[in-house]
Image (cartoon, rainbow over all chains, first blue to last red; front, side, top):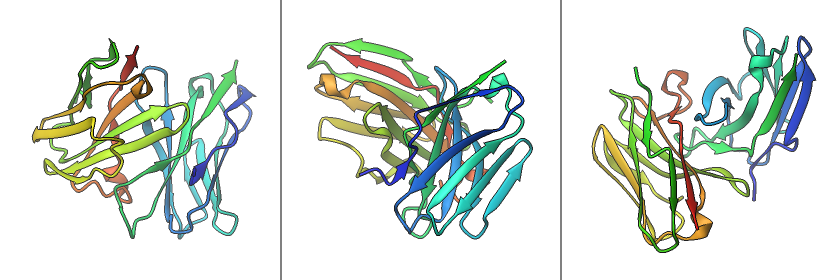
Length: 114
Length: 119
């Protein structure tokens, strides 16, 4: 049973526009969330994270929003650039339990068209 | 810093053969993770070492899988005997100092992965 779900396998946007990647989770014990970015033939790299005590975290063009009541988070990329084309993984953790254990979604392939 | 190094990058083998995947974590990192990525199940944690000691191997799928970390700079994941359903990309990741992910500075750093195909 997938505890972290990324229901859109792919997303295509135009350069300069906003990219919104979505993630839902089912485990209410998750209290820390991360986004990783993965290029082909490379490992995932950490992008941005958010604690459950916040509802927004911003880092440059990247903003993550958390809606705890809906068990939903999203990653916004503004403006999108062709170099942002990659697979984006959402991950969650229960810091009160196994605080090293990331539970990943299956990823969303983002394509930013020039 | 060279990052996490994995070898081989690609491995093709026949069912029943032994497969050994290797990982060199980032120097100074004392937490090491092995993950497997498949289309069906996505990225899954197989095993977690801290200070060379296996802490959580609950993700290891079967007894055919074993992992060792003889020292702070080297780890292996072995599959014996291998089966076609083991075909996947295997990632190694490291972090410091304790592997506690909620400290952003201790975020896990992933290697490039080993793509395994068992025929």
